Length: 508
Image (tube, rainbow, N blue to C red; front, side, top):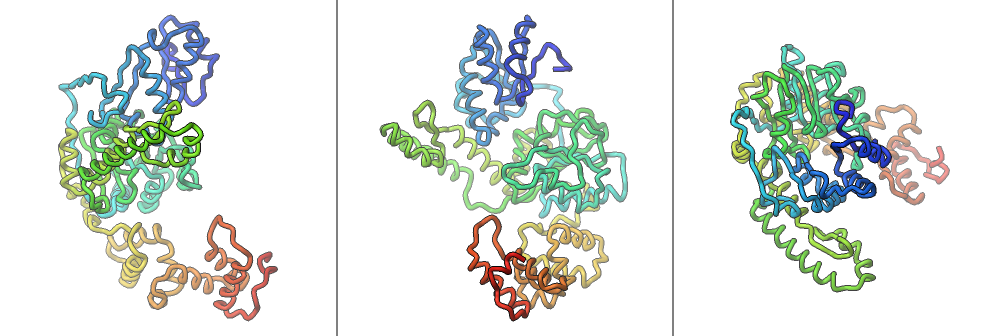
């Protein structure tokens, strides 16, 4: 690497076999840093050159809790690393925020544990606040800072590009006010890239200049150095997105150390909402997982007694069965996946279940805990503001209508009106185009409201037909022409058109 010529970095296919061979031939002392995915490849290249990595090298796995956390979605990479690592005579797994020992990866459970205690460790205070709508609360705080100024800069950690987009738009932040750091890649779960979701707000890196408002997804929760002497940290979690709920024992301490030089490093601010109620305690969930593991073990014994042809036929079932896996043609139970399920359930439905649980988790992790909403005077009025995301359309529309009818003069009403218009644009459109009485008459039925808006907003019938058809047809499925003609007939009737729907109409 450029900053350390004695160290060879292997990541993402940047270096190949020739570079590794050249490096080991020209360096007496060999230091190689690699990703999980490239680790087996590096070992194989060393072996091909007559070296024995298992005896000649010392294996150092940093932040090993990430190996546990990513075990499910990076399953093959994690398994291959653990398989190769087991052969090393000298190795250590290091983490400042380890997973509780009872949930350690099975491959590590026989290793001794050493705990280093730092007597001069900084004691951090977490101002942890339970609010109804964390995104709106944080956005209102940003808006207040935008209006009133201040020397401090906000560093906001929220593992959702959609959530970050909501905050910046609701706060009225301009692109020049923000630095947004997230992955450049498109998620397999989303059709849009992160840049498309952000629109005019450009994705940047931690090397770009600090802005008054800095937002980070999990790509910056660990392993990134941020420098800002005036930086304040805010952690924002959303009630209906489990991936935004950071683990208090492992991830939150990592976030605390991201800004290396801030004068506010002893202070962290947290906004969260309670997880939706689950009528299953953590202990009950553990017992449920234990039963599933025992059942999987019985299935594995039976399946291993079948022929290879039978196993091949049952591959689909094995791949979908919880905790079953195939290792070297043998069906085995993956206890690591079971432990990961328990830990994740404990985060979502334990730590975030209620405020007393959160406070206890923070104290157990070594933090001082306060619940001081008075510290955010411009925002304490938002504490009980209901989240829009899961609220029925009827309730949001009536709230919006009330705000509009009262002219929205009160500061909170102005903010709430803006929030509804950003998150639920149909509400504003329905109120302005149809009026509150008509929406109530239509019993708040959103599909009917959309069609009625199309009928009123567009002059030409062809445009109305096209937009109404586009609204009514399902996406990405094949639809028989006869079915489309029936839908067209209904649209014609609704628009007062006497003509009969024909197949040729579809070509218009």
